[in-house]
Image (cartoon, rainbow, N blue to C red; front, side):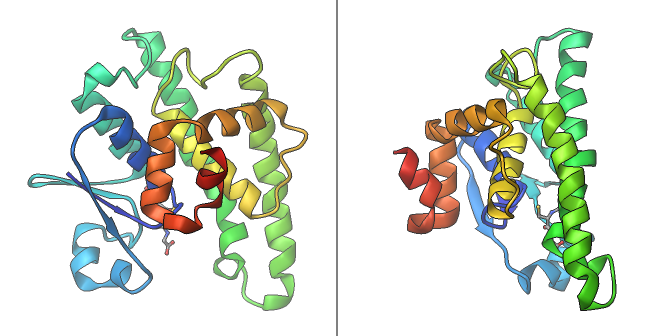
Length: 212
Ligand SMILES: N[C@@H](CCC(=O)N[C@@H](CS)C(=O)NCC(=O)O)C(=O)O
């Protein structure tokens, strides 16, 4: 299996899941040029990571890739309790992450995509920070008294982890979110998480190094 990624991007969630599952895989680092090459766009017309290649199967969209990996290697038990409610709980949190929280970060990453005129870029990024905080508050409350978003460890957890790293990197203070902070620390202590970060970011992976 091959995973196309940017260091620290949402594809890191798939990378961690590959580690948790324990199957052999290869990671292929992309950059701004390669992600817009005709060859890559033929595989993923959105020009984004992640892309998973499993034999002759090419799969895009982070939620789909996470679900596929967990379903294909079901012994990893990353899809929650094997009941309609158990599965729905994983899907509920995965959906909030993928369709609410993830897009909320985009105006912070690249405000110019949402507004022409550099003078208002800080304003749109700050407005987006408020939206991100709203979702973080929901997730923080969810983690009050529990270790994982669903009833057991699942594919939703590494996705949350990735976005908490983004929050820290883009100056969204997590101090008031004690449960999220504890979750972040717990994830940094996980061997599969540390290995994934080091593979993607190398020796500059400051958080991975700090957790060792
Ligand atoms: N809906 C897509 C979004 C993927 C996405 O936003 N990927 C980002 C990295 S986290 C990306 O590759 N961005 C490249 C770009 O926007 O130029 C998914 O869930 O997979």
